[in-house]
Image 1 (tube, rainbow, N blue to C red):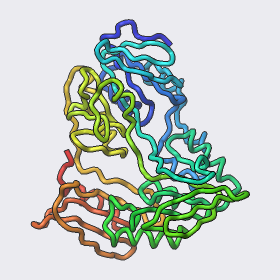
Image 2 (image 1 turned 120 degrees about the horizontal axis):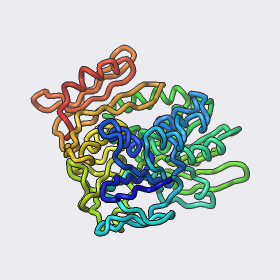
Image 3 (image 1 turned 30 degrees about the vertical axis):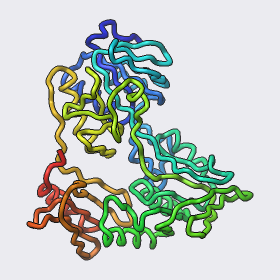
Image 4 (image 1 turned 180 degrees about the horizontal axis):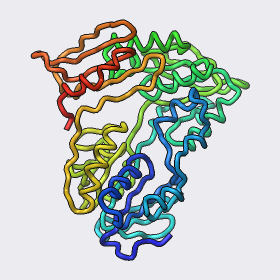
Length: 387
């Protein structure tokens, strides 16, 4: 691969996830020849990360989730691709980055670094056997671990925990889910809607353990024994931790780039450093960290023209999140954190409709389940934009 000889015009993107590759595609719609180098610590192939939590029921193994090889991505998009390459440091003054394959200069730099799974502190002799799934390589390890096994325990009843729980019970596994919150999707759903999802997943075979957490994980012969803080014990074959994501900040922090919960950017997705931008799961856009597909697409569509000289501020319309739980398909658009109002939940035949409305009756958020999901498009139009 030949690196670009005119670094002042080169766009360098760190990260080969949905954010990085979507941004390249959006740039190529506008400019076929802009010099682009994409650097990733991963192999560089393209796959759909959201499919990791539904692949078992879909009878797909890890290699089948790869839609395009790294070589094909580089050829199709006409980019320089440095795969399996670590970025060690960014010098924002000199506009160069240090990598495991040498120094690379940039004109514009984009941090599409993603996020890591949060690891809660645990005790016991089998703590190092607790798995997380954050990429395809992790998923390979997880599928290998559960092959020929029967029982899986999941830490976390959020989006990913619920999706994996549903996928595993469809694959005939016995599943226990543990969460400190008193319900599923604690940050997204009102209590009555959460109860509907819990009941449907419970009927499908999921055992819930709410308002408690894991104290110890110990290996006892062929089984793992989990002791909960409420005194109960769970015996299983595999433990999967899915308690949430934390943006990857170390590279930005070390370069003196401003960070909060994520890498802080303005509406132009520019960081505190000149010519350095960020998007995706690692970015905090005016206080919002939204690790979902639709915000990534919105950000990529705005950042692409900005990088080639047409400044375009990002805007976030209402962006409902699909929860991939076939036991009770769910679409949720939670109200903004500061929103004032209340939830009303109505059971309908085959589903649930929950609306979060202001005092004067304006719709500020919703959760639709089962047959009610057909109202998604209509209700989304009523919601105020997020940004």
